[in-house]
Length: 577
Image (cartoon, rainbow, N blue to C red):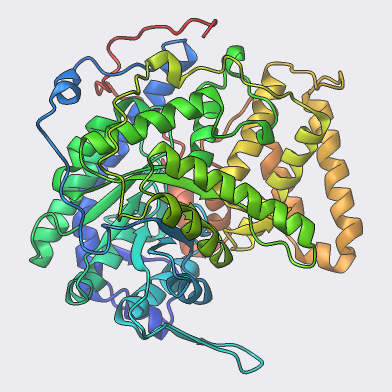
């Protein structure tokens, strides 16, 4: 159906009657106002990312900022006291915003649920609007689902619903179906604005507030932008500043050098930092991809005890607790393995070991990807953290240098044939599912989202670019990767059969995957690469807009800017680190 739009707003996608209630004129105006006030700064910051990448490529590696030293050295400032529903965060479950996932996660016994509009969510127009409909019903306690066979899902009524936290898209993504004054809306502003507009009053009536996870940031200036958006949104809706809380995912190597500044910028809106481990590994490869001293071994050999990962975790915990905010642990990607007790027990044991390492390090909580793992993680945190959090664990023993955050010294492992083939398989499977509209995919008993697919394709690019040989002695060349891609797709054709394969997106996934793993062209984000293709294959209105305006800056910011991004020390890190 078509819907009425306010001046300056164009909706370039189909809308159902139920979805139209999300895109009311008032909601459109709210989102459009935020877009008009802040989109120029967003694009400036994306341009600054491009400038910073050029510096990294030239060997100007990250360091702590000299111009913000006063913030880091001032012990007097703190973040706010934890908000209602965010005091005890021992186990958070995460997942996309489809109806069944929302119900199961909110009912799972976890303390919080991160409802994801980002990496585990494929942002088709329909998925985005349905997700907002589902979130609105979840906030009001009316969310339910009937499925064939008579099964009925609904939210529990015993008061033990997980606290809802929403993760909007990162700054690099745009919403091609919602234009303001002739250009696509920021995906971050669109996701945040609609959820906040429709739910802030109901959330406050429930005794909580609107809480968010903020992804993919690369500097404190990007956190400042979120803080300004929060302030304006609260002013527009007539609620007290500080009502919103945002937990920042430290999932880029550059953000790790600005953790204190990020907390400082969010001021009264900060609810801590989270170790976004898989995206962090992706960022480490991506940002340093042109330098051979940072080539990493197989994905399975890079874990939380790797030198650069261990340093980042220790610094995050110390930073958060010195400022009085939560230091959240990362995702256990394992999922239960049915009909194989031995392998299932091995997966559970890995989760236990991971969560025990986190709680003993001082984390205040952790993430799991499956409802059946909530009890496993709770058992570990309840044993070692009987109190609501560990904000009192200051970790004053920790001293992390810039070199530590970039160190691969002593990292064990190798680049193997199996690792190469696994990266191709995981990358193709995930991209094929994403192109079908699915953002969270179980592959080889792990729950994979965009971050793990990004690691897979970035490692292949890095290995090809630097002419790496596998442990078996075979060089990784564009020709070899192309042959392995052909081999992998042929195997999938035999496994699926012609009819099922024809209905799949593997041919397109192979084409897009191949475009960004051959050691030359490198797309900033797989999600941008796939979204640009998927959206342009959609409505004629979107195709017409792109024909008139050319490529957008979504994830592929091309304009340089003279903005001072803060990296004035420009110290080089020695290759021996």
